[in-house]
Every structure is written in C-alpha cells, then in structure tokens.
Image (cartoon, rainbow, N blue to C red; front, side, top):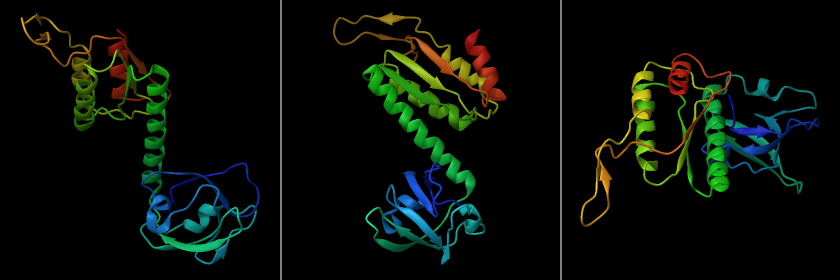
Amino acid sequence: GMLGIIPDYEDVSSGIISAQILSESPAARVASEIKIFDKITGIDGVKIASGDDPYEFLNGTIGQETRIDLINRSGITRTISLTPISVAEHRELVQRSQQNKNRTLVDQVSKDRIGYIVLSQITASSVEQFESALRKYSRSKDALLIDLRGNTGGSEHDRGLSILARKPYIKHHPRFGQEGTDSPWAFTGPIALLIDERTSSDAEILAEGFRQ
C-alpha cells in the first residue's frame, strides 16, 4: 500500500521523512494529516530501522486501516491511523500533482496568456474533456500548450486531430455587440504539443498527425 507521501530520498537515517504530501491522498486527510518533514518511525507497531525498505511494512495494507507512528521536527510524537491506497492510485496522484505544478508555472511565466491542457489518454472521455478545455481557452488564451507526455493511447486520435484542425470559416460583424464566427470553438493561436519517451500507441499517431 501507499500513504500518499513523497519521501526524502537523500535521508539515510531510520524512518521516512515526508518531503511532499500528495493532495487527496490518505496522508493529506484531516483525520490522519501528515505534515511535511514529519518522520514515519513505525508502521503497525514495527519500528523502521536505517536501511529498511519501508514499503515492505506496507505490503497487504491496501484498503486496511494502518497505524502510523510519527515524530515531528520538534521531537513531538504521535500515532495516527490511515488507509493505504494502491500503487496505481498513488501514481495517478503523483501525475496530477505534477500537472498542477506545470499549469501554475505556465500561468506564471505567460502571465495567464497560455492555456495548459493535459491529455493523458486518447479515449472518448479524455478527448471530450480536452474539447471542453479547448472551448474554455478559445476566447481567453493567446496560445496553447498540450501535454501528451506519458499518454498511453486509446483509439480516438481522429477525433482529437479534427478538434485541433478546426478553423473559423465565416466571421460575423454585427452592428451592435461582439463579432463572432461559425466555428466559435476553433483555436486560432499558436499551439505546441509536448511528448516524451512514454507517449505511446494512439498518442503517437495524434502527435504525428499534428506535426504534419
């Protein structure tokens, strides 16, 4: 099981120092809140010694209430109970945390002029969410950064490319009010697409289609 913390990997003393607490994880919940720099000294009454693999103590704990012994930097100890999650759930929280950091960075650097959209899969629901985000940004952002890094694919690349290829074809200039087009959700500004070595399957097809 996983607690929802990112440990301090440079610390070689006994226990686990929490360097980051993942939002919405068991460690972040009010009833069992672990603070940054809290050290986990024991799990279910078993002390964690220097050199121990702490994850061995969490084997078989997914979905089960688990007792965690803590000590903070002031030397105050306490014991909490939480319910560990699976590795897959933990990875999703890590990914979401990194995406939120990326979005905040893009907003800061661009002064809110660039929209950041994550497309983690090329499934019907993911592409629908992507289209919704594109609609949101079509009139509020000057450019788009679409993040396909780690995308595991799907089967909706054609729909995704169709959304990206939309162009306004007629502009309306009313005497009163704002001008408009017959393709109101077409994004006309610059678009950049990010991929990495983990971008695979249908996501690679979408990326290549976008490049061409």
